[in-house]
Amino acid sequence: MNRYIHTIARCLAMLLLATMFFACNKYDKHYQIYELWVGGVKVTTRNQSDILGDGAVRYEGDRESGTLVLTNANITETIDPDADAVVVSNIPNLTIKLEGDNKIGLGNNAPVNAIATRNLSVTGEGSLAVGARASCFKADTLLIESGKIDTYIKTADEEVASFMGVALWTQDKMIINDGDIAIHYTASFSPISYGLYSVSELEINGGNIHINPDDSQLMAVGLITSGQLTINGGKVSVYGLDDAINAKFTHIAGGEVIAQALDYFADGVCRLVTKAEITGGVFTISDMQHNPKSVKLFSNDLHLNGVSIVAGANEISVAKKEINNYGYTDPYIRIEKEE
Amino acid sequence: MEIEKALNGTELTLKIIGRLDTVTAPELEACLKESLDGVANLVMDFAALDYISSAGLRVILQAQKTMNKQGDMLIKNVNETINEVFEMTGFVDILNIE
Image (tube, rainbow over all chains, first blue to last red; front, side):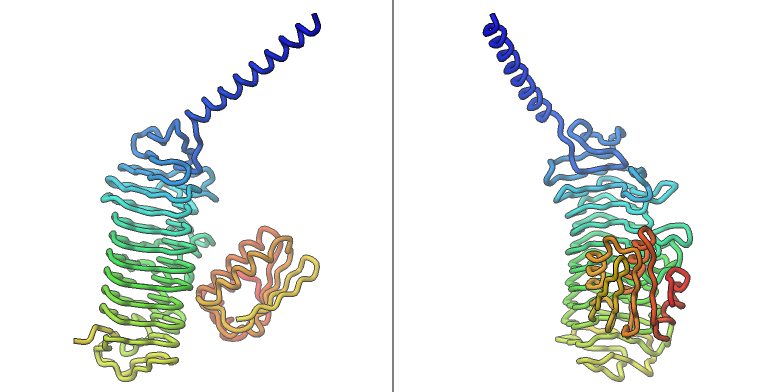
């Protein structure tokens, strides 16, 4: 009798284990959680086709890569407005596709960060207006392929987050291939706020980038990288409080660059610190404050290959010296391709 | 730029030698990131610091934010040029400078 009961018990146990196994598998098949939060909502397979329930935001992809499609979306919430971003992603490769006119972080209270991701691409023919106090885009890498993007760093006074505000920030490579990007700054005065900042590498191949177009408040530095800045094409217009451009290594091979700044620290409107090569395009530099007849471009090692300095430069030193132009009648240096 | 570190219990002193600019600021940032765990008092000695740019100011401010949560931070031996930068930028009101 005991043996009979033990046999039944073992069968029941095995049946129970088998049921649990299949139930778990069935559960996994139909429900997955992504490392992606949008507007304070965690994205799962159950809600990914309409994340916020308004038809404006959906995710197409899996746990490794995918596309967050925004269609006339207006997303303002975060899980924690003083810590998180409106869009937070730990998905290794995420694309944001813009359809229609979209807004992130432009509610009554701007979030600390708007979009915080790992590798991010932005594409689509729509637009995106982004507001935040510390960073509008913060990513490991960022690739902008298209779209009309307006970023707004904004805050109340005396807040440290926006004091260090950066519109687009990457630890690794930032590439702009196309698109229409405008960087606005409405926060308090800060000498350490940046427009486009990559710790390692910033590359511009096309598009139209306009930093501080409103002139009402100025970000301190327009383009800045502790590594390589490469400009191959497109149009970049910068009006900075301190430096228009600040880079360790610089190569300008094409495009049109208009760099204006107040040179707040009086150490160069453009600081192309270690080595700079200008081999093409048109690069115009203006000092809007110190001396309308003098523009300071700082470089330890400047090479001009196939381009010439125009607009009346009096003295040009190529290697290991600052380039100063005194006695200008025009308040700018322009470097153009030689005919 | 060189950084000399001296740890005495929970007090960490970093002596910054040279220039703190776009090129060298990431190095200080990395040093702070790996050194501040368990530190209650951070002292930054600027006696040998020749120049600081906005990139350096960001790293200093980030360090101040971190230390606000776990202790305090003091900047000492600031030369006239660096002090002028701190005054121009309003950092004198944010940092504890001796």
